[in-house]
Amino acid sequence: MCEACDIPSSRKGNGRYDLIVVGAGSAGFSAAITAAEQGAQVALVGHGTIGGTCVNIGCVPSKALIRATEAVRHANDAAARFDGIESGARVVDWAAQVAQKDALVSSLRQAKYADLLPEYNNVVYREGQARLVDGGVEVAGQRLTSERIIIATGARPSLPDIPGIADVSPLDSTTALALNKLPHSMIVLGGGYIGVELAQTFARAGVEVTLVFRSRLLPEAEPEIGSALAGYLAEEGIRIVSGIAYESVRKTTEGSVALGISRNGQSEILTAERILVATGRNPNTESLGLAEAGVDLAPTGAIIVDDRMRTSKAGVYAAGDVTGRDQFVYMAAYGAKIAAKNALNGNSLRYDNAAMPAVVFSDPQVASVGLTEAQAQAAGYAARTSVLSLDNVPRALAARDTRGLVKLVADGATRKLLGAHILAPEGADSIQTAALAIRCGLTIDDLAETIFPYLTTVEGLKLAAQTFDRDVKKLSCCAG
Image 1 (cartoon, rainbow, N blue to C red):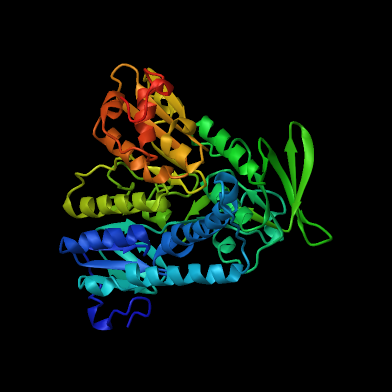
Image 2 (image 1 turned 90 degrees about the horizontal axis):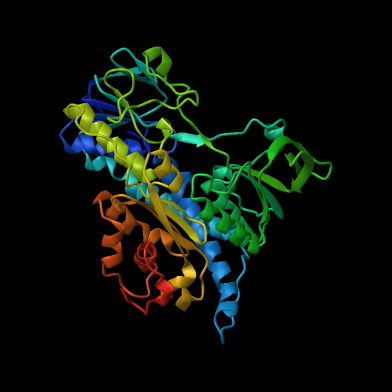
């Protein structure tokens, strides 16, 4: 019997399958279920905790803690925002919060992964380290045979090449979420979405946080958004140190961590009780025998795939974080579904991320879809943009929280919407409207003329679309 998923050994097949899926996370399950629903006999190979990054050590646990500390912050802000309100909150038992998070993770892992496998009679689960061999995959000394293989082994936090970093017991996004005791102070390395989310979470829990990064905050986002968010984080007490180069890391005689940096030609030392590294992720490809099997890898170790999810070796596909692109759980599942259908049905489907929404669960949230202004210009568009500050959005005024902006990017010739970028307390729940607009080829005029509900954050998209040609400050409520 398989301990991880409670599958009787009588269902473990004879070693020959229509499809072998290596990796039992979101991408792996998506591929296996897609293939099983088409009647294929599937071998799903897992190694380690079933469920992969998102449910175990990524999306679910981080968002649970983000929401908890957000409640603390909002309770403490309420008196300042609303007259006649007295409120306040603080973290008194971080271990209890972590235990509650762990219970949620465990229940979702069981319900959405382990308990699903017995529902698919034609999926066999194998536990063990996999390696590609002629004609299939070898797992724990046993050969599984198939002409079609999907690699979906994910990625893990990487350690930057800074002298001394490995000697100071650095935290990463996995170990930081497992801390039962909060440190007094913390240096967070990395200005990407993981660094931003974790820095704000720990700061709101009461930790003195210094956020350090090489260039600018959220370098893939619109500059206006990164700059504004950096200001909001600083207002919460997070020390922002940008435009630096890392020199070294060492332990101090007091047991703290000292990070040596250079900025504007000057060397500085930053100290804290702990250091958290959030500077990137490495694909899990080392032990799969990919090079020997003829599967090409990028210099980062990521598996190179085309728009059909095919690798350089016929019959071998890859999906999810192991490909190094679009590292969001929903894109991993989407790519894996395409890989499974192409493997079984002839490679007719293309991977399309043109309307891929992306969210950073900071507060205010960052949400984007489509092209940035720079990307649109690089693609040859005569790009036009509008930028609307949130103090023009009635919802933000009523909530007494006008942090943020909406930026739209349009084709100056056709007026088609090319990109939408939102910084707002509820921005994540608004971006899908823009994603649908881009997917359907709508123009900024279509957005401007669409009926939006009043006193919602998503109304900001309509107002930003109107801003291309009108001064919305001269409109009455709901006008236009």
